[in-house]
Image (cartoon, rainbow, N blue to C red):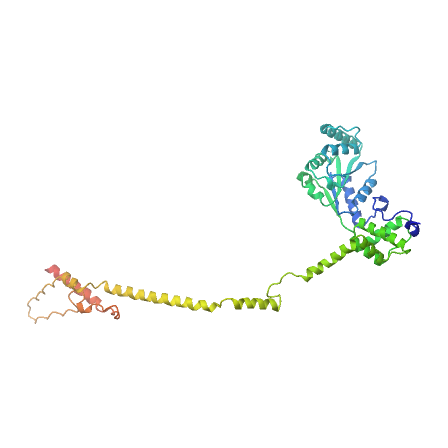
Length: 425
């Protein structure tokens, strides 16, 4: 008796071989199917389905191929199993999938055969669709250019062929090898892992298809399956298949959480999940350094210590003040010297004044009249334009003599009189 008979099953419920009978139409799988069907029905030319490893892309591709009616579509599934394929091999394979008899080995001839076949299908009212699984294997620019060239085959108002790529996320990088082809992507959808509720429904669905009337997994076991599989259908199948076999060996009619954990440990998934759970804790143990204001008392003490160790700022201030005071004293000394020079400039040495000054002309006697003569008005100041010798400014140590502002008008008058006398003479 094997475990299928022990649990009353007629087929393996969790085999990883693609089988459309076990296709689980989850909410996101249903959305993907609707969008891809719309792309091929309206002949968009190019659509992409992206998903991580084990998310069910191949099963979805086979399910889509089965759902396309033969009377309306000429459809084919092309599986790329190696990244070293050539453009000639690709074109010849597509020609065979579309129904071209005896495709040529020459590129120009096979392209002509494909075009004639597409025109024939269009006249019959059929739509040509090629589904390409494992499309991430198409890693050369030459292959991308061939798909772009085929997608350019069209008649007014519609394309003659539509390609649907199923592949890993790396397919997006491959499409960048030919930017014009990337721009022709009319639809793109991404499959995500299942959540816990979808995992529960997925397990029950496959058990029901296999002939079971109930679920052999406890709620805690299903939760553990979701944790260790991370919602990836392929990993769900692997864990559940091994768990049913372990329960059969233990003669248990149900699968408990302990069995799931034991299987996960044997598969190496327990350590992976444990490392994943401990990763946030390790990050929390070593938080990013905070600024000194919010880091606590210790960083503040360290900052204070650094401040105390630095030379105090007041030591620089007196030096600056002394320099300023010295500068002020120098400026004052220069100012005093300049003032003294200004005072000394208008007063030349005494000998030069005596030699340069002309003798004053004699005064004319007033005319004789009947009145008593009026004595001449005494001069208000010296007759010379230069000051006497005793009016010479003192030595630099003496104070600056105050200017006689009141005598300046009288000195100007004497000069005028002197000029008049000189003219009369």
